[in-house]
Amino acid sequence: MTKEQLIKSENTPEEIMKIYQYIKSFNLNYPNYNGWVEKCKKELESGYKKAYYYERDSDILGIIIFQPHKKEKNTLEIKNFRVSSLNKKRGLGSILYNSIEQYAKKHHFEIIQGDTHNKEMVDFLLKKGFKIIKKQALYSPSQIEIILQKNLRNQN
Image (tube, rainbow, N blue to C red; front, top):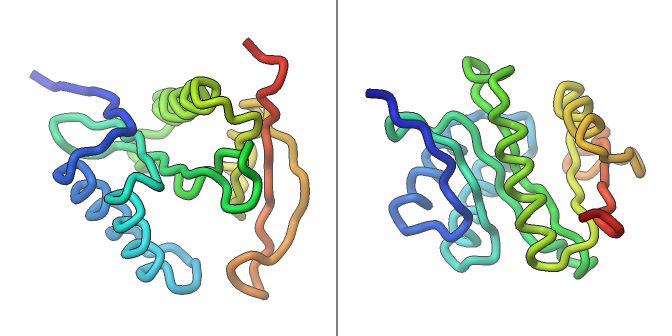
């Protein structure tokens, strides 16, 4: 019997290790990605970063990692968001995104922000009500990231 479930943001040490192994397995074109993965693990352990992930039979199918914005205290920032290619178009991204939007509202964040250079992710976030606020090189001078925000004020 296949068991699928969404795992919440208060992660156990075992879940943090599973998240760490999952994100470590991706070789993304971001400078010092492996260093970020190590820092991410420590910040998950401290509770600064949080994660939701969706799994089937103990295998992660998709994940969203988030944290309070370092400068804008009313903003929740998406730091890593992915659904495995075999599981796209199943609604998992929406389940994960909706989970952090509910988290943001419950914890009185007014804005959710993310950045990406992935067109598919930009399109997904635009469908979720995000607006492009600027484009700039954040991680590498040769790669322009698109910064998007969704204003949660005046939403139920």
